[in-house]
Amino acid sequence: EIVMTQSPATLSVSPGERATLSCRASQSVSSNLVWYQQKPGQAPRLLIYGASTRATGIPARFSGSASGTEFTLTISSLQSEDFAVYYCQQYNDWPYTFGQGTKLEIK
Amino acid sequence: EVQLVESGGGLVQPGGSLRLSCSASGFTFSSYWMSWVRQAPGKGLEWVANIKEDGSTIYFVDSVKGRFTISRDNAKNSLYLQMNSLRAEDTAVYYCARRGAAVDYWGQGTLVTVSS
View 1 (cartoon, each protein chain N blue to C red):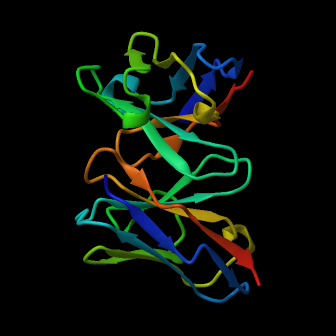
View 2 (view 1 turned 90 degrees about the vertical axis):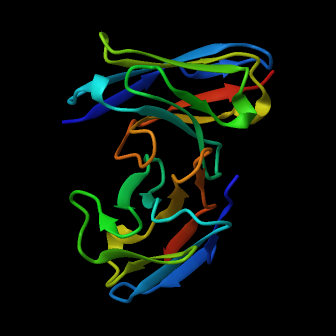
């Protein structure tokens, strides 16, 4: 099973600043990596698929990148609605696995 | 508008059974892999199972193999999860999800609580 490790567990950032979230895979997942956003009491929302392609309707301030087994989600200028938990997930090998999440909170 | 509506959750005793249903609308159900993903209270996400468009291919996470069954009825635009021999660790919100890999639409979830 591929283990996905996200860091940090909690990230405190001020509105308007940039946030950088990391996700590492225990082995190669190619570009088969997605990012989701989840707010309390809600289902997750797809942000990025294929490591770097924004899903439909996702603002351009969200971007994804990859380098080997290291993946990054960058939010360029945080808005109030961006404070949430973010999960990465690989879909290269079954079972598809998620990271443990990064909570993005207001500083 | 794509909609996924789960039902069938509730409180069940350890060792009991429950059947979850997901009613889909707003898209051609028979053209998509479908999945169940769960989230224990206050915890992260876990992919439970997925099923190919025609039901011919199914995958389960090891922790539910032999206990859970996934099925679909394309004529009724519905997805199902039959859960047997339930354990306390199966307690979670169960989400119905469109696609078998990168989920683009999620239901709101149904809570399953396994407790005596």
